[in-house]
Image 1 (cartoon, rainbow, N blue to C red):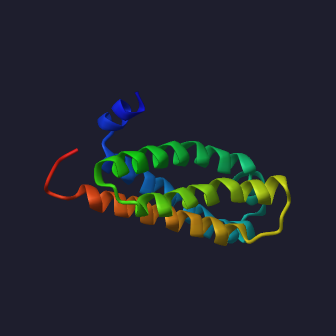
Image 2 (image 1 turned 90 degrees about the vertical axis):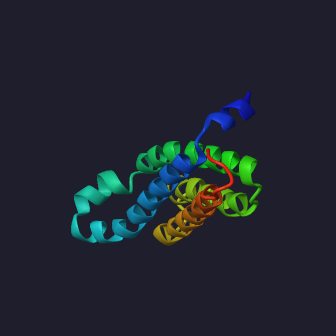
Length: 136
C-alpha cells in the first residue's frame, strides 16, 4: 500500500514544499535571536515556545519522509537519505533537549545546521527528478 502511495506522489512538488519548510525553519532559527533582543514579549510567548517547534515538525517530517522515499524509489540516490534523515532528526530532537531537558545548547545554530541538511537533501532529490528520461 505504501508503494502505491509513493507512486502517486509527485516528488518534485514534495521537494519544493520540503525545501520551503526547511528554509522557513532556518529563517526562524536565524531571526529569533534578533527578535528576542528587540521584542522581549514576542520572543517569550511566541517564537521560542516549544509548541512552535512542534507545529513546524508536524509539517516538515511527513513531507520530508514522503519526498525522500518517493525520490529514492525513482532514482536510488542514497544522498537524499544520508542528508535528509539526519536533518529531520536534528530538527526534531534539538528543541526537545533544549526545552524539555533544559540543555544549554546553541539551538539556533544546531537547528540551522539541520535545516541546511534538509534543504540539501531536497535539492539533490529535486535535481534527480529534473532528468528528461521520465516525468513524475
